[in-house]
Image 1 (cartoon, rainbow, N blue to C red):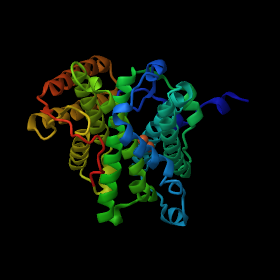
Image 2 (image 1 turned 180 degrees about the horizontal axis):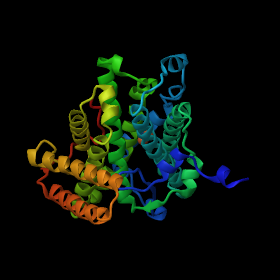
Image 3 (image 1 turned 90 degrees about the vertical axis):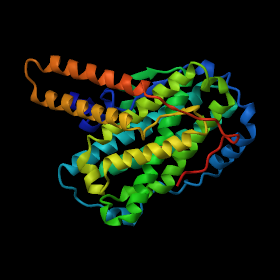
Image 4 (image 1 turned 45 degrees about the vertical axis):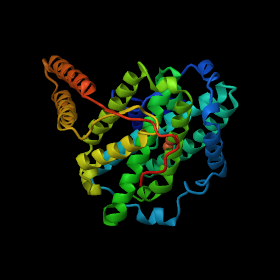
Length: 352
Ligand SMILES: [Fe+2]
Ligand SMILES: [Fe+2]
């Protein structure tokens, strides 16, 4: 076999890249997970597991004839931005799949084992469906290669819970917001995959519910110093999404979506849902908070421009920009938050 045959293709390389904004692969302390107590939420848990077992989306992630009929050539730079969006999506779907599979394999906790098998099943379908769509463009990601080669970040179980809970719920909010928008403006649906988002987002919603129940069963995760961590994860997830979305202007223009409006709608939905579990919410409506997020976008764009321009003093300039970015993040972190009293019922209904 020659070297070229062993080398990953460009989209696999793109998916493998490590940056502040790229989806990560995680590993955790599997032993600590064995001790997880779910007895305080047993009834809600059992109901949720019945939903997983009934597998409402078993037939959903299959392409039908309309998929092929609606496929069209995309002009540049829309094609590149859409592919970039799909590569980020397949990476994060697959990173979830891989983490859940790994937990399922490594723990003996019967409830956790069963849950992880169901969630890995769902994420494998999601990742496979996106990758099949990437294949139409001739740029499918080699998921096996990613699993072997991508750096895994170690997170304590509680950080896995905060991060995955949020990424599942924000994933739900993103899918449903785009779906509802395209329902009103079907002429903007330039790719058939968007028609799959409605039933897809129900999976993400339920995945988020699973982590909400785990955290509600262990209230120590939601109080004391852990409040500071929750605040950190909320801001990290929100600001990453905001900066990344603002780098894909052509994609959002094609969908007829105003990125600011879209992102703040997604924040509103996610914040509303997160009241089921988090003792605080970010005040994303505050003008000062919004100024901070916009500044992060400007800084990120300036870094990108400087990288493209090169030049002797480029690295120094970018160091300064990154310091400003870090300072802005700290200012956003220190922005006052809203307190939230947890509801009696840990389960939430979909927001839309
Ligand atoms: Fe998913
Ligand atoms: Fe998910």
